[in-house]
Length: 385
Image (cartoon, rainbow, N blue to C red; front, side, top):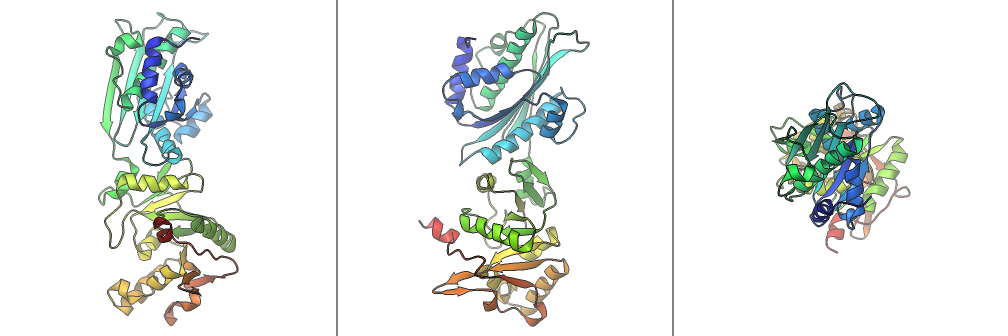
């Protein structure tokens, strides 16, 4: 099928704009996907597309039974899930977005209800939902599919910063009785809520597929770091620690720091994208291990020798040895402990045996043998390359 000239022009403009999308289309709108793929440059626009046709597929995408599958709320939730997925698949500073369509149109049997569609777009700034009730009986299925697909393309152009068309109604081919209803709203987003001290979010788990879950449990052990950048020393340590402990190891990134400004949202997302092929990462507002332990009780923290030295140094507790012991005792009371990997210090390889652990905290730190793990690389050295 030949792509209409006005559609091809708009698709090319989308391809030439920044932004990578994950798209979900349910019930109708798949012609838009064919148009996007049919114009050269689709890899600059599309990260992934899914068609959740079966009810179970929709439930899997949204994460719950939405109750009403064709609704503006369901379209927004689908778009949010697509956006989260895009965060995991995107690279660098290029903006990502989620787009979703849920629709019910003419089929091979009569329908009692309206023929309608809801198209939602979600980016880091906000969410927009375009709703349209089609004039029932005025078009066949192919005609209704084209209108919905044009609305999908129009929404994609709009969220990409492109004028949808000089006359959107004419571009869509609407009848006099049809009208697109638009609803736009800002959203704080889970990362913004985490960054805001008053946002009410203290822990956020980002899955490999980009989904973000507030307050989700964190299994087993945690390897904390700034991950600027994530490198194979981190991933190899996590793998060895998981094998040693007999439990999974999750990466943890605190968006706040004891002596530095909080990370900006865009920087948080940039660092999170590094974990797309590695595993989940938990985001917290916990710069100290005492605060991490309060959020993640019963957890084993995987750390390096240099971090262990700072952990037991009174300097980081107001130069008060008693405050240091009390803080670490609280960590132990919360069921947490530390697995310490050795690090090079000049020409010497240091281990947990070189850490001045107070007698009353014996057993809180356990060493990972040099024979199991040694990686003489640091994020600082990589940043200086």
